[in-house]
Length: 619
Image (cartoon, rainbow, N blue to C red; front, side, top):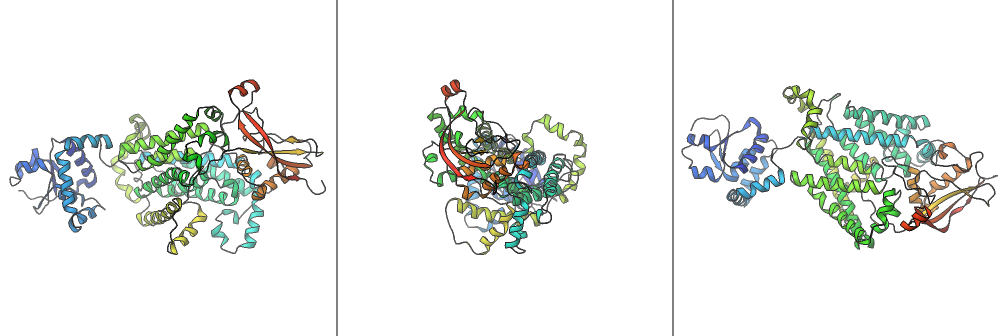
């Protein structure tokens, strides 16, 4: 045997199964281990019988020590950073070596079956896959979503929280300042502590738009992502009810993790970028798992009978906040279809999330199922940019090899010549584990608490854990999710009306929520009319539980243009009304015959006053 400076792994070159896994190990160990088929090098090792070469891989160390089977695999993987624990378990844990060797030889005796299984699960390539192009796509998509969020809010911000808005930010911050000391800066993290003017409201929204464009253009992505997160958090903290939706929380959580997922460069090129942090990649995948799985579990543990008897969708399409016109048609479908749809939804929400952690092809299948569900939700309801955020997370289940060759060449084309010279430089251009590991530990700990709470399991956690949850909570970046845990089975709708004499009442029409019975339901996603959404929540409870609603009515009595701009029509263009009232109707979709005869999409039944008739003093 000739003297070697590197270890050598010898395998059966005629075995397709062996070649696939050797390709994976070779990509992991790099040039630290040499590989060769025994058909080429067996003559150098006369002491090893041919039958032994055919039965298992052989690992030859520079010292001449020979290992075979599972031990050879584990010794090979000790040359992969972070994989040394596998050999330690093999050698130190009782029974581990026996189980490992038995498993190895079981696979070796049935290589044909396991070769087909490998192709089925992993495809033709078992090598670890890169996510550089995938990250590029994900960050561009996140930039587009941030752009949508800021543009949508910018058009409404003055009417919502401006000085003449429904809940002025200045008034809110003044109350907080009077009641809470310096702790307010932590409990309510917002840049508006330094400036609460309308100009600053416009600046943050406009700044968010500008930063979103920088992210789309791939300029200083890490710094830009931090500022986008800080700007949106500042707005969410002071907009309260109007920025308290699950997609706002999801955007902040994704946006926070994306800071540590992006390359640490001012103008990164694809091949000059470091590969993304696998720690943060898996944190983002865990977020997708939490988002989808929680939605399914909470529907079951809530005890809501409509989910348990699979009838929830017979109510959902007409009772959701902002239906689309497609919702009307789907609502007409028979009961068996609605029940089958619920079953399919549960299958996706409760099973597909586990495929996130499965081998490549199963992971792709899970990705496709979740994306398909999101597209169906987008077609039948206006959930703003929530579905786009979920699809963006699904992108991270796809590796670079997934994308079509032409697309890869188009995106990477002019930079191919830099590939060999820049990969080496990339190691210092991503966040170190000293930063990402503590973040991962905190997120995993809080997520564990959230999962126990989701399953209604209440544990007496050690004091530091609830304290950590409280400390992190104000930053809205590690959240719980679960839409429609309890299905609404009726649709109370508030109609706001004004009058000059207390006798003749004229309705204010909103831009997108139901009002006029002949008005076709709209598509407004991915934008969000936040007042329209809050009207849906207000109708499910009383005006006492929605103090913003009285403020809204007062603004109508004052005829303030900032608030009126949030509405579709103003029935009092010349002079504000003397009186405002809000009445409640029960709305339902019409059927085909009624729609054909009357041209109406909705029918309604009067229920009564929502709140007392309001007027300004001296009015």
